[in-house]
Image 1 (cartoon, rainbow, N blue to C red):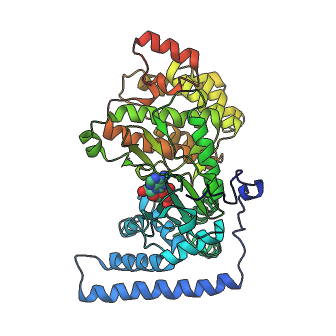
Image 2: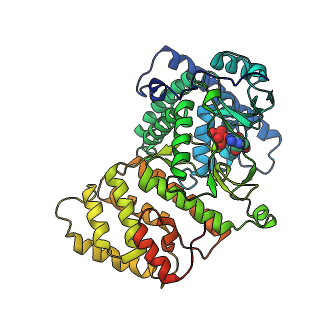
Length: 465
Ligand SMILES: Nc1ncnc2c1ncn2[C@@H]1O[C@H](COP(=O)(O)OP(=O)(O)O)[C@@H](O)[C@H]1O
Ligand SMILES: [Mg+2]
């Protein structure tokens, strides 16, 4: 057996590898111009071809749908940035007119992987040795291929089963150029009457910010590590995990980590078949996530079912730390105040105070007591159960609306947070429709230990592990 392999990050990543470098969006040079021509040609050709095909075979589609299908063909040819844009359009129906959301659903599927030779070359460059030497076994056909990267199974020399998550080659400059082009186009769209209120440039700005966070595998692995550490910070949460990062085998474009085996969180049918207590997994998972948000800092920002698994041994597992958020101190306090109030004393003056602290209310909008009373009269009855379930996702979404009404800018991080709550809600609907996260003191067991313990004693139900 070979002695243990030690790659460039065996002592942990160097600080410079953890910098998120985001190239400016406003620039437009020769590379952009050239790519813009390509984009234009590819999209025009794809749309025209699809429309021509529609003349011969309609397959029950409208012409608009055929054009949209053609555009998606073009997106797939043009690669990751456009596929990502398609994913955004597909998953924010309501924002874009049909047939766009339906046609772009295809972007949510897997994309063709990049070839094994490229994979081997990247690993050799990153680690200094080819995969056949670095690993005892390496599987050339990927477990999954997505727009930004792909995942391969492998086995370390000591027998540990692992995976390697690799970034697509050349993706950084490509996405930089594409985003600049999209930003330009968005600017044009906003100058038309139809598009002036579309917020097109904001959509691209958000995509830009998220993309360059996600494009740094070392940062991703680092956050995964920190999140994993946070899970067990209080010695509990034994039934939730995240794959251990194998730093010895990581490189600038690749993460090597523990391989896990399980099913996605929305396979409600399989969970029932396996006798998994879905509600319990949900509570445990939500507790870990809430602790990350309110105590540790970096929280998981992409909680769709593909990234949250129920492992074969019954543990819940977080995967994929490409997108994470972190609230600043004031906002974190606001979320804490919101949870505390909803769970323990319904004193919404506290929430009003928190909102004022973050600068949401303009001058002279009324006292904290007045606003608190108002909030309480709306939310209080819902919380005490009289009017059915209050959902926290809506609460935050409404807060964001409120901020808009006051012309205050809502931080991106809060939007990200609200999205995750909507995911949690989706799982709740499927797994435990009667369960109310805001009423479950288990979630804040480590955040407000005394109050939570008192509530548990009052209810007489011991907490799960
Ligand atoms: N640690 C792991 N163990 C087993 N499979 C994994 C692991 N990490 C990723 N995968 C597989 O690869 C897929 C994509 O990984 P993910 O980290 O979500 O990447 P992406 O950013 O492409 O979504 C997962 O849905 C899963 O099927
Ligand atoms: Mg994923």
